Image 1 (cartoon, rainbow, N blue to C red):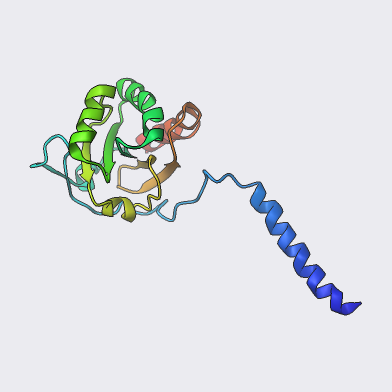
Image 2 (cartoon, rainbow, N blue to C red):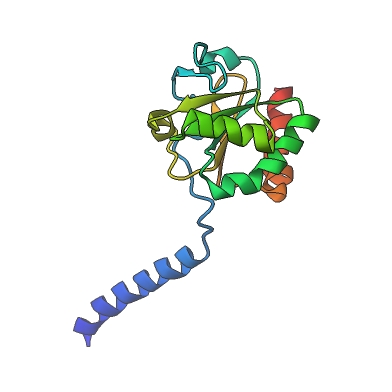
Amino acid sequence: MSRFLLPFGVFLVLLGFLFVGLKLNPREVPSPLIGKPVPEFTLPQLHEPAKAFSPQSMRGRVWLLNVWASWCVSCRDEHPLLVDFAKNHQVAIVGLNYKDKPDDAQAWLAQLGDPYTLSVSDLEGRVGIDFGVYGVPETFVIDKQGVIRYKQIGAVTVDALQGKILPLIRELDQG
């Protein structure tokens, strides 16, 4: 009888992990970068490659970093929301164009609208790797000190924007 208790106990523990795992939302993968400074980088601007951008230039401002690409279907879904958001809110949105051809990215923005204060080209995806990006789109809320406060995995939705991103921006802007 006792030789069956150990396997049965292990089975119950595994069953418990399964039930806990089934209740988790796969879109809410915690980022190890939350609460940590933005990775340092310098990249050429998409529209003016002779000019570079570094996160240091955003110190003192709350801003969003949106990782996108012209080949990304979900980016196309979130794009109208970002264009509308850019018109109505006073927060800078920096676009990180991820593993994309600059000509394709520029054409995409010309066709669909450009919500970005500026976009930078991450041709090889190295900065995306530093940010822990494993799929586009992803959006980061960054505070005035250059610390990542939130990461939206996948397309920004109206619910995410109104329920999480905007309240956090207002809170960080007051601080």
